[in-house]
Length: 168
Image (cartoon, rainbow, N blue to C red):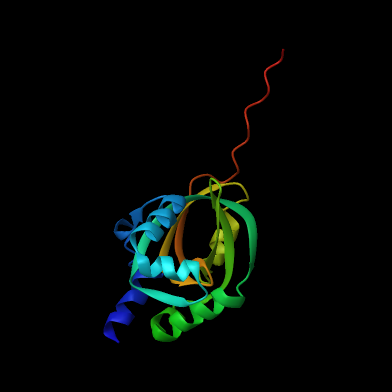
């Protein structure tokens, strides 16, 4: 039980958040590499089972926020609720009730976001803006990776605009 409590503390934002302990990778490369290197994750992605990864992989992804968010529901919600039941500290830190859509090239992911940081994310990160997200990879379910977004750093406040067209 103590190990599970320690895992919960690794993912969630708080006053002692350890930014340096999160490995910087691309979302696209992490998913491709993980499926290739870990047969247990590959079997979860290929099937309908749910599984948790221990210890939680602490990652930083540079991504683009699509501007879309939604209430957390369905299989991801059930997976996260199961994980939260095993990690009661996570409940004290705000839980997860919604998710945000992010992209890394052609890779699209819905990241459940810690409720305590949602108001800041909503205010600081605009659609199309680049953002560095700090996530815990907790496992996979129903053919999808499941991450928990516990912190972020906005690269820019407004989306990048294309350069003006040059006159002919």
